[in-house]
Image (cartoon, rainbow, N blue to C red; front, side):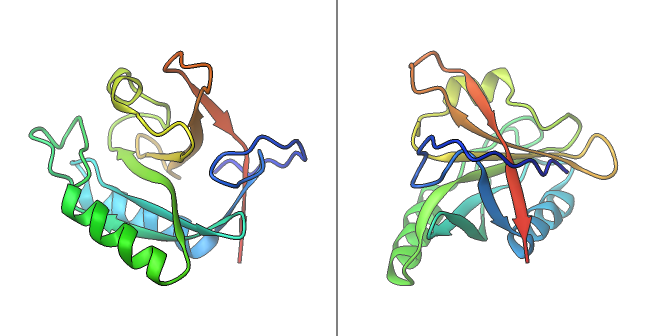
Length: 153
């Protein structure tokens, strides 16, 4: 897993360029990816005080779940509402690549639409799983920029 630290500021959903992710959240995401394989899993990253503190599973309603994910809109709205009620915000999204590395695919790039959110991908092609954290390039190019992160707890 990638654990890199730098001190530069680049605000993405209230996060500095180095994002802090709770170990329990990251472990839950990897477990979800393994449980869902060979389908892609997906879910929400909940944050507070500049850290990802929780991961929430959502249903993948894509037609071909082996190569694509679509977060169930009802899950998205319900979990966003519940997060707000508990003092969290949806800081981003996660999904898995069951047979590939943790890099955004062409489909990921074409369908991403939240430039102020984080995107975490778990690649299960190798053991241990590869984890990548990204944000959309704010220049509107549709490209993802890799972000360093640290795990805590």
